[in-house]
Length: 197
Image (cartoon, rainbow, N blue to C red):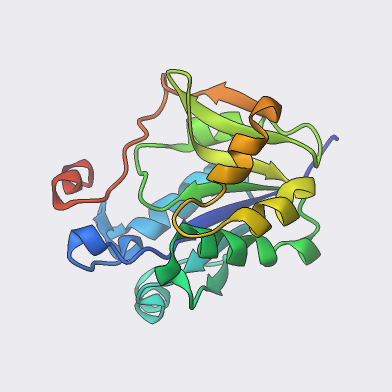
């Protein structure tokens, strides 16, 4: 396909339980909310359409973060875990004309546009499954061709997200090595805040 439409899907609903209940989307990074940085990464990687799934303190995120042009999706079930956010995000895409969803997590600021663009470029058809790899280990972001959305949504429960589906379809996943251009750490605990500037 010459110009596929790949939508960025940012999961930013987490409540930061291990961070003392500070919503991850609102963590300070370079003087702005972390969610703004994550959206910018998706845009710089090539995603012209970006959907952001909000949950914890969604009203405050809408008020404090500048997210022009983004489609904001409230996930009232965010406390159930990442699976509910992934389902909510995928459910927002079918009528957009998107051929694939490039899914990233708000709490991984070490993954920049270079890595995300590599995964974006792995798209071949709506049947594509691709994921960043770090020293051969699968990580984020992940790219789901539209053919896979129903199956992923059906299996996304709890905090496992698409893990069960990807395990079942492991032989179909194109792994895109990104360890040379990104660091796949998460901001989960107070000790991890050292990664934020």
